[in-house]
Amino acid sequence: MNPARLARFHDCARYFICPLCHTELELDGTSLRCPNRHTFDIAKQGYVNLAPAAKQSQFYSKESFANRGRILDAGYYSHIASAVLAAVHAHCPAEPHPAILDAGCGEGFYARAVQQAHPHVDVLAFDISKDSVQQAAREDTSLAVRWFVGNLADLPLRDAAVDCILDVFSPVHYGEFRRVLRPGGIVVKVVPGARHDEQLRELASAQLRHTDYSNEQTVDQFARHFDVMDTRLVSQTFAMPPDDVRVFAHMTPLLFNVDIDTLDLSQISELTIEAQVIVGRDRRTSTPAQRHHVADVVAHDGEVET
Image (tube, rainbow, N blue to C red; front, side):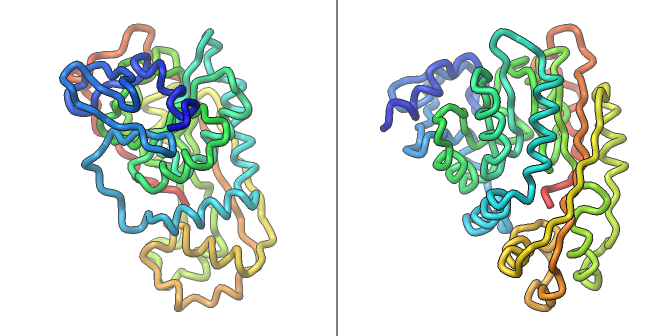
């Protein structure tokens, strides 16, 4: 294996714990191993699977992540990435060796952007989907991001391991977020705006349960767990060629339960990409509770990337 792909895990004990027994993981050859000899091999792409029993949704396939990668690489989400980077730059604690966790990293677009903008920062990134993490690691030319397959409800990370968490269009597990976040750390949360995908929502209205979208409940729940320091709405409407409209339609969770073949996608020539970027700070000033003492374990706002 390329030594550079292994090098990113040289200090894995600083961050990772065994997902089976929650003891410290150490780098041993080309694997991460705990004192109880639970062993997790580092794949040739440069990631480690710390949720070997996890099952990914039928909607998230290699093809869907490839489609997402194409849309992201085309620049349709660049304004959102810029807002995320600005939030990290303005609010991430200025520790000597800060660590940022991308929770639900998908194909790695935002984690790679943060690593490139802040090469001195340790970036950890995970998703429950092995296919997405494989793609993310394969496309990481920096060979610096610590990619892993992980379970949001039981993160294989030490208590108080990170200074900042990115939660971009992903569900939240507030108990685990607060456990792995250092006191005073921040969460940068991105949720869809009310106008996000509005052209597709209108086109597919007959097959959607709700044609309007509101993030009010999600934002209110976030504010109950973190002190909101900043919020920003970013929106841009893009002219979109037919091929990109088709790719977008097949990758967005908005249309997961819609028969796309029945939609006349030729009616769509532009698409609005809108998001609200919220920055929240952890209220605690003491060391977080240990895993078995966390009381607010289940708090799930349920939104997914659209």
